Image (cartoon, rainbow, N blue to C red; front, side, top):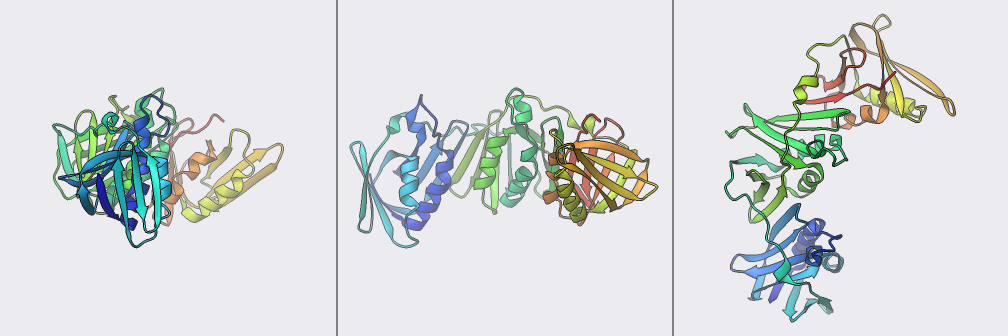
Length: 366
């Protein structure tokens, strides 16, 4: 194989693709590499860790077709030093590849291409739809941090992506907090519901372009396609819990407060949280204040009341302050509403005038 490539484009593509190589594989060493495939379909750069995989097209000239696998760390380190202009030539012979860029020449040991797997693609997609890549990225990034980090229950370590009634929504929960993000779409599509492992979903979000992409789904795989590029991930074969059952239908206490005021007060109060990272949230209806407080025997204590619009009953709940911090940067509205269902029941946080994002967090034992 002999191919000529633009330095900058090749460098950028390798930087993306290298994230999908399996650096820890001991059973199949070729998975730690990046495959370069030059043939009738052009030049493709491919990597997979068997959980996710990517196949990206790169412009170039094919002098001699062929396919090789180069260790991803080596190819990434070499290509990252390329300038924005000029050409790079890759020539394969035997078990080595010669990478020439200007006067620089590197000879690299290759990995066996015959062992390199093909990307698993949805064979008979039950759902196919188009969506702006930026919208899909927003859905994933808004909720993924709430997925469980434990694999004991794979469904909780995943992002639920589903559609119904002209909306696509993403949901994630670790059973202590839950995030739900919805967007409206113009294109008609069949209702669907899939579970993408949260780590895979974040890999997708880092790679998908802002432009329109096509999503193809079957029972086991999800593929995102744009142009000649394809990104795939396996799906979790499990039922997602009916999370709507834990979202309160009514609330005993509600407070509306400026988001920046709440964020600043929480940051200051958290300094005095205890070993359980606990802060107290007090709904003082008579005083028309939402008060944050914390006590730590070794550090001290803090109480910070915020002027708020309150309705319902006075109430005090305790929370892990990190769980209260999580959603705040994700709200776009200036004010947020905190709605409590009562002692031992969830707190729901929404942006005022924004029904697209809901965040729920369970209180700690008092």
